[in-house]
Image (cartoon, rainbow, N blue to C red):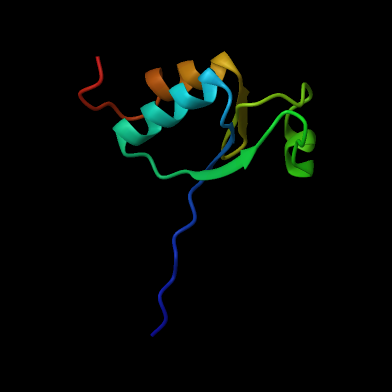
Length: 87
C-alpha cells in the first residue's frame, strides 16, 4: 500500500519581504492550519497567481474558491480559521 500525501485545500502565495506575508504565516502556523506555500516575489509573479488576483500582488491566499490578498488575507486567517490560544 502506498502513502498518499494529503494536499491542502488552501494555497498561500508568499513574499519573503512582505510584512503581510509574515503575519499570515505566523497565524497559520499558530493555528496549525495545513497550507501549501508558494514562495514568490513581486518582480516574478507566478502565472497561476495572475489568473487569481487581478492586482497581481503578494501575499495572496486561496482557500478553495475564495481569493484574498494583502491585508484581507491577514484578517481572514485571524478571524475565520479555527481558533487557538492566539489573543
